[in-house]
Amino acid sequence: MNKVLAEIIAGVIPHKMTRNRWRGLLRYGVFKAWKLKRRLKRDHTPPKYYLAVCAIAKNEGPYFKEWIEWHRRQGVEKFYIYDNESTDCTREVLAPYIESGLVEYCYWPGRKRQLAAYDDCFERHRLETRWLAVIDLDEFIVPVKDRNIPEFLRRMEKFSVVEVNWLVYGSSGAKTREPGGVMERFHRHSLPEHRLNTHVKSIADPRRVCTMVGCHEAARLSGKAADSHGVPLKKGFGDRKPQQDVIRINHYAVKSYEEFLGKRARGRARINTLRDFSYFDQYDLNDIED
Image 1 (cartoon, one colour):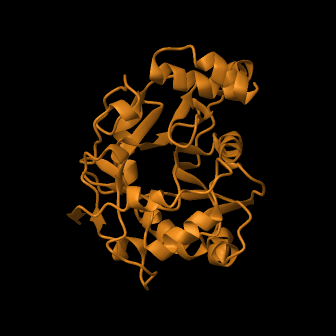
Image 2 (cartoon, helix red, strand yellow):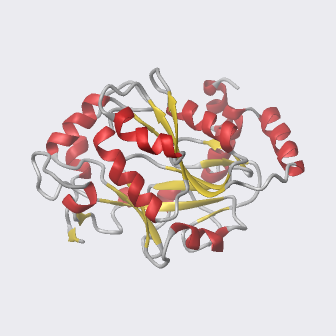
């Protein structure tokens, strides 16, 4: 369905979570979603992976190795990477991971192609993995109470989607990019209850989800969404208190000021406008030493 028409129809639904779910279903296509749900009920193909990650990136080459190695240690078995016209070292850094089969690489040109990449990933790979986490290169999933992410997810298998809150990390006062990994260099974060930390990213069961609504929530075909405590969701993420005590996503939104300028120059995945310079001040939160 036309995106504008989907927004108009979904806009009349008063309950925010229901509205967002229908926004995704309408964008995907209600009849198409119905056919998919029927097909998936009959398909009992066992998934090859328990947990995979989908991400779209542009000129994030220097950050890929740390990001992949961290998530591999946390139990991710496969990465579906959509390269949005990178001109840096992205392909060279990913080459050994592509060769080993850990990364499936897809060149994905064009502007405003984030949601299209997510659509493609779900369509291609929904039968391959039990869970699919949809995150960005500046986001690191951190299990707090469990040894790894799959250990956490095994308690959540009755749900279609688990929404995990951010914990925003600031620049730690760094003006320029220094040697070392992101998690090593930036060790001061926001107050846990900060309003930005109400944002979530989704880990979805791709057999019960058609695609993403935006970059935060998934459009469910069936079942319920839960928070990280395993409680079914009744409110949109903006109306809930952030949770970081069981699992969280470390969100390194700005890094150093030099790196923020590079991020700003790369543009945005969903819209054509550049980030305002006030974005740095908004996300440069350094309240607590980790």
